[in-house]
Length: 209
Image (cartoon, rainbow, N blue to C red; front, side, top):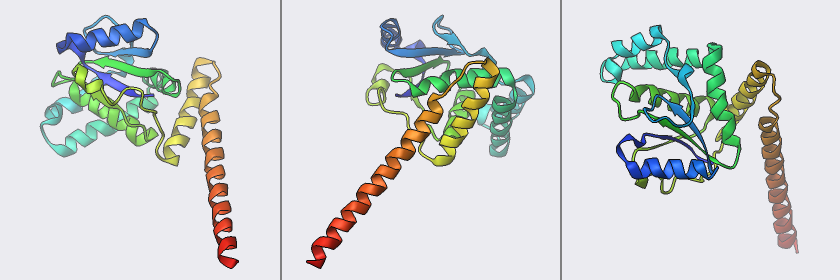
């Protein structure tokens, strides 16, 4: 289902929508920097002081473009190399395999925090080929909820499987759904190829008559 970064601070209707769906067990809910006291907190995803210093040097995304890219690279390294950051990243990423939408409430509209969220979204897209959405008002959720999350590229699938394996070892709990997903997608691909080959054979047979 959908992975949604939501900032409901300025829209009570969006906040109510999220709370209602959470209370009905229809969504998985996390909190990355939101002032609302909701969801599982992801405080270990905050940029480390040296990484945050780079973002300040880049004027929080409004300054030099190369400095902003440098922040993205260092933040990506933190997410992969800092064990606590990595575990919190995978805590919600593994949820994207389930049927429920995954909401991360955050301070997206805070100018000094927005580039952090955007960098995290960019990382998720580049590493796992998973597209996340942003919701600031209730109208934003229309059309993005309940959209299946697909790893659009094979490298994205393989990165996800690799990181799930590492996460499983760190927390001491088996996570097999990622591997099952890869095997199922491979089966679907082979089935589609077989159907196409059979279709071509049928056409060739009809033409030869």
